[in-house]
Amino acid sequence: MKKSLHYILGIILIHFTQTVYGQQDKSNQSAAPLHHAHQVLTSITIHDIFSPPVASRIYAYAHLAAYETFIKGNDSYYSLQGQLKEFPAIAAPQQPVSIPLAGVYAFMLTGKNLIFSEKTMEDSITQVIKVYKKQLSPKAFQASLAYGKMVSDSIISWSKKDHYADTRKLRRYDFVKGEGKWVATPPVYMAAIEPHWRMIRPFALDSSAQFAPHPPTPFSKDKNSEFYKEAYHVYHTRNTLTPEQTAIANFWDCNPFAVNVHGHINYATKKLSPGGHWLSIAGIASQKINADIVKTSAAYTLTAIALFDGFISCWDEKFRSNLIRPESYINSYIDETWKPLLQTPPFPEYTSGHSVISTASATVLSNFFGDNFLFTDTSEIPYGYPARTFTSFIQACNEAAISRLYGGIHYLPAIEQGQIQGKKVGEQVLRKIKLQKT
Image (cartoon, rainbow, N blue to C red; front, top):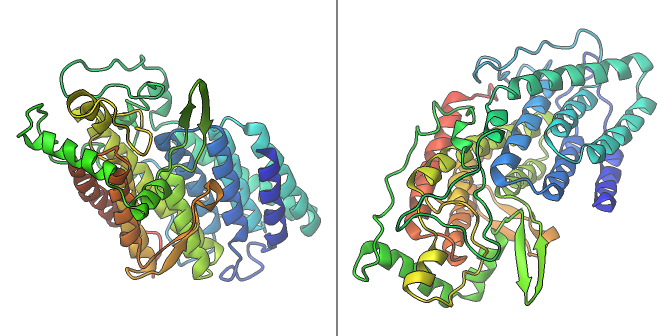
């Protein structure tokens, strides 16, 4: 882990730029420092095994801190103050500072406050500071750090009011008893992940239940019932997968902690989370158009907001409907030996989380970069999967959604309703939050 982070840091240090607030035009700033700082944070969230909802929270606050720093002195972007509930007013720096240093420093300090591997992030920050210390005057250097810390402190203080700490104090989740209710699944029968996530304060949503989907199909064991047919569809699809469908399922797996069982040997595989994957896409799109650091930050931030609210909306429904997973149903009523291609996640089935957050992300990214945006998604190459090319963000989110059927972990209605839910979340973000003025 440390070796990979040191490699990433080496790239960061090569690409850092020296732009001083109030002294140079900021429109052509390189976005490389932000891209690579984001990669450092991603590496740590993977190492620390944060669940998808919690990872979305870490990303969101870190990128909000960076964005509010980078926009200072740039009249083409709006502050989030006045757009997000109780968001702090952050004044512009009163003396010359390096905006790239202050912004990336704010990003990394905020991330450090929200992760477990603080020492790793602190080592990264130390290396960044060394580079700037050589490039800036002592006064500008200290002022930049002070400003970045001020922004980070403001964002962290605001984050503490989102009820996350309250959810840490609640009792362990008790499974709901009854036919058709979600139960823990093989191979390790993990406890429920974030059953109280609906309590988290959203950014653009009026409430966690604002876009509650239609209820799932009523549970039934009857072979002539609609529910049985939906389960059998999953069963048949998994048993007749084509190589392309298998590749799609694996590419979009995004399981932060998959447990592999081979005889008596168990080991875990860590991967990019769904939110981390879509933020990677936001970074890929920004790099393709050579977006400057402010536009890049806006793309990351808008995507992070959509992800954050998408998880809140989805988790609200998951623990309301509390629906049994295909693996549990199929093993009980169709084929006791059947296994899904992907490991079943430890939370209820309806709606599909990847369908919700992928569609929410694609909705805001399409608005930001355009509907017909060709890009090659290289996000999963570090985890052994080849790149895939898409003609639009919507095409990518549609593939991400249907991958859950191919993987054997969702019924089709959870995917279809999840995409409807995600689109509504993305559209709400675009209605409530404006970043670019033109």
